[in-house]
Amino acid sequence: MVEGWFARNASSLKVVFRAVFGVLWVIAGSLKFQPGLVDQFPGMVSADGQPSWLQGWFTFWAAQAASNAAFWVYLTGTLELAVGIGLIFGLMRKVAYLGGAVLSLF
Image (cartoon, rainbow, N blue to C red; front, side):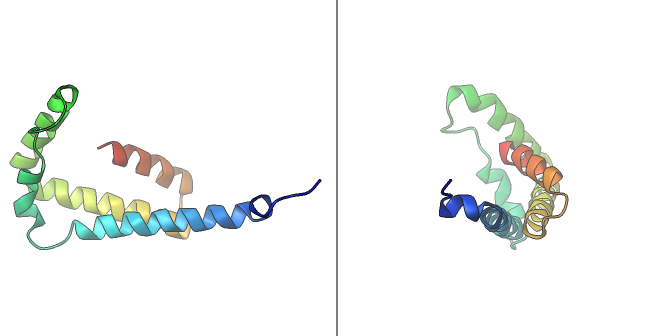
């Protein structure tokens, strides 16, 4: 049976893809700690221009962002950094995979 290059290198490719996604999560998380984002955040979360079936979701998060923007910005940034570091170093991979999937929905 002849194996292709992808089949022979599947484990290495999984590690590379996991690390690349980890780097992207770390970049996204580190951007949450930029100066001025907390002040701009409530204006970024708005139901205006969203489809009608998403209006309730965005209205809920706009109210949360308006009431305590610093908490949500720093919590999201910290969670994104944790997922990214977990993916890069392969720490608690299943938790990182599940956490990343759930976090990406929010």
